[in-house]
Length: 220
Length: 184
Image (cartoon, rainbow over all chains, first blue to last red; front, side):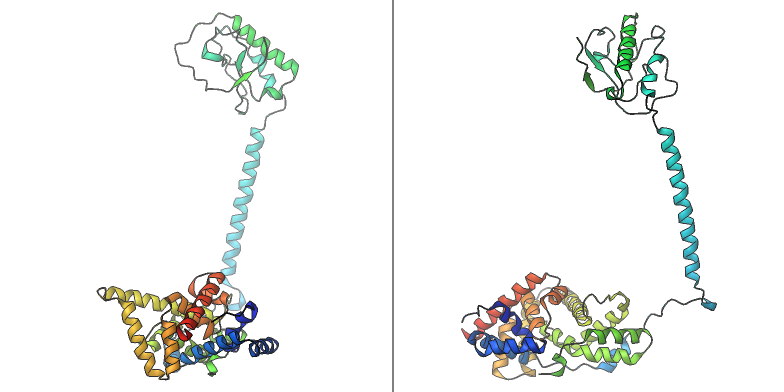
């Protein structure tokens, strides 16, 4: 017992037996079957199977139809051809539009208020003009002010917007070093050195400054 | 070949469905008459030896009850086969729960032969049925949907919840097994 090597013809045998092929294909398959013993045998088997299962138990069509549910009617329209549902849909759509537009406006306004002026980050530096009043809270390696000559400096890069009036004792700084020009960096370093020279009493309270990334300045 | 073996016209089905939805009960009669014989055969081929009429009726009731969910992605007959298969499997599960001491599959196989032998007594056909009944349930479903109902592999895959490729493999394995049983 072998299978025909012509896969396409073999695949079509069941369709030929079922009578579902178009005329042109049917003729083509029949020609192949006439010259192929394997396919002729398989077609015979298929016809036997169909014949064996052809006996159909009788079904009472009328009884089945009587048991069927009634069709669900289409949505009723209000008189005058004005569908009520559509009216409601319009109101919902209008409300949603208003909510969307309002939300968008709020978002735009909020975003504008959060925008950082281009050079404002450096403008905050001169505000560190009273370092002697209270211990300056500059993030320094080890958290101790005595490391003033350490070349490692911690600079905040949180990207938070600068506060309009930062506490006097803090070095306000927003943005990264990449945002600053040479003059601004020099001004910042100068302010830091001035703060380092000032007498500083160690604080009793824990340093609330969050741990910040370390940036090597490369200065001696 | 029997008339109800002829391929169905999907566009006719859709037109009849539309007419039934519009309130034409004769369209429902036409739909049932077109598909009930195939559903009855399929039920028998799945081993449903009793209450075939009831299974077919339940299939139509369920199908017509959810006709709005029929999207015509597949043919109506494929959809009906899918519903009927699920119904029969559900029935078997509940039967199995009721008779949990007995192997239902064994009982089904034995009585199925008897019931079908009453319908067709010819020796060759009886041998064919025996050969087909030796297939696994899935192989048998795929094989008979392909041979008896002329469904494509894609349609068969929809009915049995498988893939087109898997249906093709099941069909060819079944064909090989049937031929071996008959001719070796």
